[in-house]
Image (tube, rainbow, N blue to C red; front, side, top):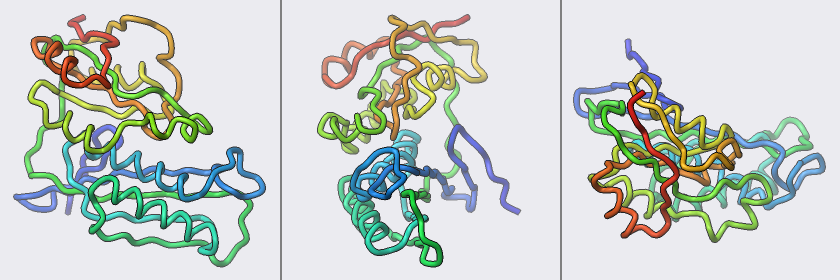
Length: 245
């Protein structure tokens, strides 16, 4: 019997003594080209950003994606076809063009809103310990909180996969966590779970805004390496500090 471990939004399956599987997923509805969609946009973009969320979660954790499954709640032509194109293009951007892509579309019922779910399966070296804060450190922010139509208007401003991977490889970066609909404050507090630390924000504005499809990533950075990292990554800004209660 495989005992699954839940960590934040990830499911971790220790399938062997060498590697573990890590699973992340996301869904999107009401964003597309159908009659009752709340936001009108090319379904290819909808699906691409739906994929982006679990990819960011996995990259921030340090896991390497090995397969993607899309569950499209619409017909293949034209909606599903556009979504698959968007997912495939996003995999290229993430450097994952060659990993398997499988899925399903809805061919039995007519649909009036756009809907898609994406699951990404990744792997990581067995024995990885989940992050627990144990020292004073700085909170840095990558990106800005965008949602809905703002995501489309600001696509060129949203950070890239190579940048996220580079930051994850920095020795001074202790933890990274994408921000979604619950906002910066919620995710920053999640970073302190089961520890003696609490977050002190430099400013109070915008902490509860939705960051939609992971348009913000929070970084816990060692205090003595904060200045160096900020000097080399102009995309980052300091928004708080983690200190003992």
